[in-house]
Length: 154
Image (cartoon, rainbow, N blue to C red; front, side, top):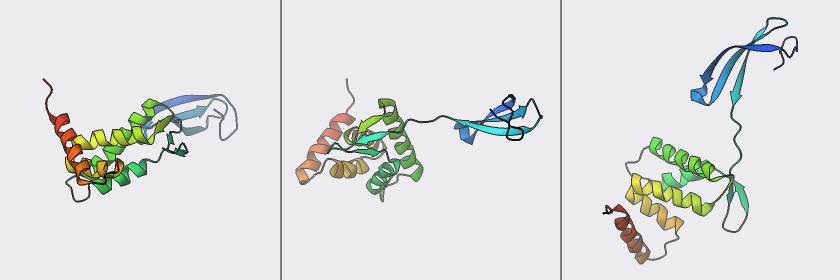
């Protein structure tokens, strides 16, 4: 690390601590040549997450699209903004564990899995758009699936 004062490349770390809620590390450094003290921040560089659309095109992952879709599905329900944010973060984290490229299908199913636990009405609303329902029978089929998933296995 070069000293910002004298540009010497021999500096030492005097103190390190977590910063920005654990997202980065703040380091106090001191130049061994001129004794100038300065602060640096160290962050993890994330690999970009790419979404493969159903038509084969590629887009950058946009967490806000998940938030927007879930907010629409939960409108008028007793789901808090914090719960929506937590759901979107959990989906993004799961997708990052899958690798650099994920499909829209993987994202949609992950959202549905979490909505089913969070709010069944919101789950049905989201499913009706995601699965492109076009008849009342589609809702009935989804309700039956939801009931089967809710039954304790034994």
